[in-house]
Every structure is written in structure tokens, then in C-alpha cells.
Image (cartoon, rainbow, N blue to C red; front, side, top):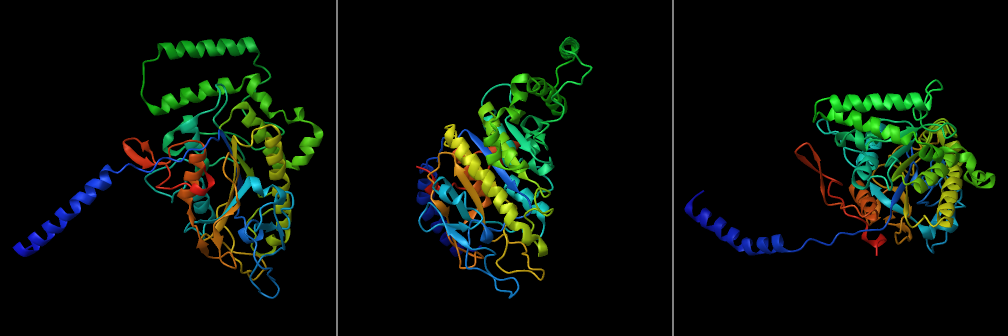
Length: 425
């Protein structure tokens, strides 16, 4: 750099210093904070098609290769907001609901990677095991009362739903069958109460005699044992006794997926902070929401199952005065394009799809964001996955701007997401 260039650069830099100083001194925007206490997160594995559910457009025709919705649409309780005709029970409840129609990410070809994105809010990283949304909320808010887990998964366990670098303390308790409850919380038949008490006393003695350790593998193991002993208490295990509910209420929820939603409501009452309810592939059509080719022919069954269970959940929570405290979240790994594939089904679409929020004390509006005439491109109010996660965190009063720590490495809790401000206040 010659003398003239140095002076020019220095003068520009000095001119910028006052504005930089003002920016550094300017107060940050106040945090948005909601008043929800719990989350029931409903996972629709396979990729729910937004154009066939919460963002309907003109009617298409797979036989004629005419892009568009597979079903007709119906009006809802919110003027100007329509949903698929098979969401007839949710339609009159949409004033308690917001279909966020402009969620987007860049993963379309691989279900596992997209599932990871919608559980952790981030791309897969070979050097960092990111925690799931459920584990992050468990870490930040814990259970509402002692003796219950902060996070329960009703579905199949896997790493993408887990705690990542947060460790075992923020992992989940899981079950796959509502008729049985979680495995491992009931003593074997040959272990009477007095024998269990002797075992616990022996364990306590071993702990006292063992040298202190900071090894996370040992401390996590001890924490898991301690929690399992608490969770095996009759007070908590009673949460899984769905037969205590009235028969007509159980029937209003529908089949196994609906019973999972009913159990989620019982777990909210017990004090669990985050419950994920998975809609399994084998419930209706064997392919779940992954409606390539002929899988789309039974899609109405999936939608009706969702409609029945979620409408029952909303009205049940409302009757028990829990809806304002409980945020219901419906997500899927991506959406579906308006075009039909060669077999009459649909492919994958990550550039614009719908996720749904209900209850949780939010200012609902039926729908947020706008897509084009075929629900293929975002026209207004895009919402990134970090933005959607930040909205969930904000609803629970969690600081969505803070860092978590993987050892000494700071990791932004939502990867820089900003809540949907229109849903608060």
C-alpha cells in the first residue's frame, strides 16, 4: 500500500468509527417472551404435503398431469384462511391455530438429513452433535415438578431426537406402545419392594466409597440411575394408565396416534415439559406421509387421522384450561411439490412448506406467510427453520439469542433465528 492509499483507507476508517461506536452502544432489541409452559410436538414422518393440507391451492389432476391440490378446500373460522376438506374438525378451530406456510430449508433429497434439520434446526455437522429441540428445551426449562422427566418421546428413538453435546441428563424417556408404557420402569416380578430397597442401599454405599469424579460418562450414568428410580414411582407411572380416562373421550381421539396425543395431555398434567408424538409409518398406509406414487391414494386417511386427534387435543386442553400453557407444534421433514410424479404421487419440496402452531398463548391468525398460486415459492414472510425454532423458544420464555456450550465452544441456541413477532403481544 502506498502513502496515498494508506491515507484514503485511514480516513474512511476514521469516518466509520463513530457509527460503529453507536452501533456497539445501541441497546439490543428486547427479547420476545411468551408464557407457555409445555410443548406437544407432533411429528409427521415422511413429509406432509402442505398443498394437500394447510396451504391448499387450485385443484389438480394427476391423470392429466395438472399441478395442484389433490383435494378440495374448505373455509375455516378465520376469514380468508382455507384448509383441505379432510381437516373438517380443525377448520372451526383455526382461530386457535397458525399454519406457518413459509417454512423453508435446502434439504430435499434425503429424509434422514431433513429429519435431522427439523429436529436440531441445523445441517448435519461431522464435528458437533447438535441437541434436538426437545433436549434443548429440557436443558433450559427442566420438568415442571420433581420426579418426572422433562422430555418424553412417544415413538422410536434415534440420535436426531437426542441430546447431542448436552449429554444424557437432557435425553428422553421413550415408549412405542401406549398400551404398555415405557420399558424398564416396572420392577421384575421377582424383585419385591424390600429387595429393591436393599439394592438401593448397596448402590448408595458404593457411591459414598467411590472417589469423586468429573468424568461425564460416569456422572451421566449416575444421573440416569437416579432419574430412573424416581420415574419408577407409582405417581409417575400412573400417567400411562389411559384406561382411567372416560371411554367417550378416548374414542374422540381415535386410534393409536390419537391415544398418543391423549397420553401427551396426561403427561402435560403430570409436569413433563416437552413431549414428541410420532405419527408412525405403519398407522395407515405403510408409507406414512411419504406419498410417492400410489402412496397418495391413502393420504386422506392420514389427514383424517391427524384432524381427529389434533382437534380432540385442542378441545381437551382447552376444557382443562391447559391450552394457553401448552404449545402444540406440528412438523414434518419437508413438504411436497404441486406437480404429480409418474405414479400419481408427489416428490419432495423444501423451499416452501407448512408447519403448524396451536395454543401456547400465541396470538393466532389461522395462517402466517404466503406462497404463490401453487404453494411452490414463498411470496411473503419467509420463515427459516431457526426462525421457527426461535418462535418456539420465545413462546416458552427461553432466550433465543443465547449460546449453549459444547465444551468451550459456544453454539447459538437457534443458529441466529428470530421469532415470528406477529404471533406475540
